[in-house]
Length: 126
Image 1 (spheres, helix red, strand yellow):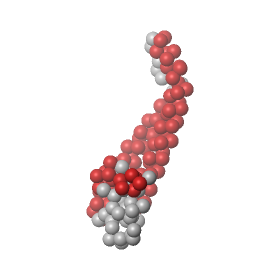
Image 2 (cartoon, one colour):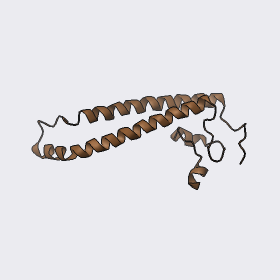
Image 3 (cartoon, helix red, strand yellow):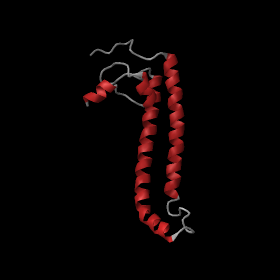
Image 4 (tube, helix red, strand yellow):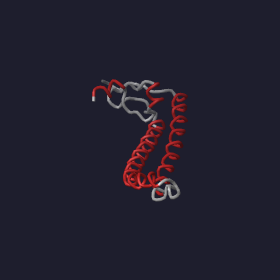
């Protein structure tokens, strides 16, 4: 499949995607801060004055909570990195072009997954 130089989104469309992605980065960074602060505050969840049953459950789930928070934070950081890479592709005007087929990735897919680098067609071939 040859890469068609004309296969790309217009500057206007790219600007719309850029805005969408910047919004998502802002929200993702906010969420990451929440995850990190929850991780920092895990040792004291304000359960000191609650029922003993809940406190025992809480202590048992603390390790689990720290692990899942850590995993969440890692996923969130990767998501932010992927979104920032999408911004670079917008600057390069290569955004929205499938890296396998060279075709435009469906606009609706990009609205749902703005950091996508594969069309549904290419994704299904994996």
